[in-house]
Image 1: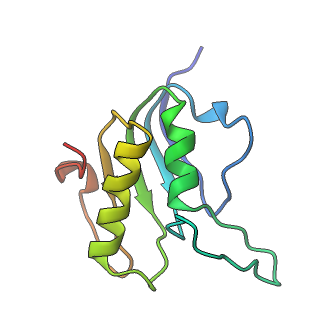
Image 2 (image 1 turned 45 degrees about the vertical axis):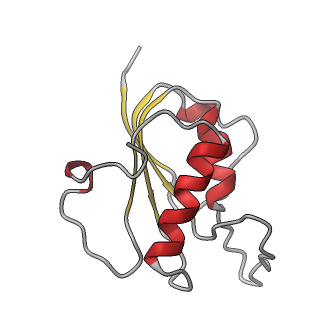
Length: 118
């Protein structure tokens, strides 16, 4: 059996039965929209995205070492993104380190930054 060191969701919605992410040391997942009841209109050109809340709910049922979130919509300020991450960490009892890459920010060592939820 091969170890899953790094998994990257790409630009994709959360899928049913997302156990393929189980036992991954570092999971990088997009969270374009925050969720939390906001209405998200599907794009006519077919791109689908995940919401932060969907990702956090999924991660709560996985065995994962760390979570890195990114691909947030630029409609959200950093403070709103961080507040939502902390809210969903508590709501879904996320017990792995969670880091994020904010829109329009270049990060050279995201794993070297302290996690938001510790």
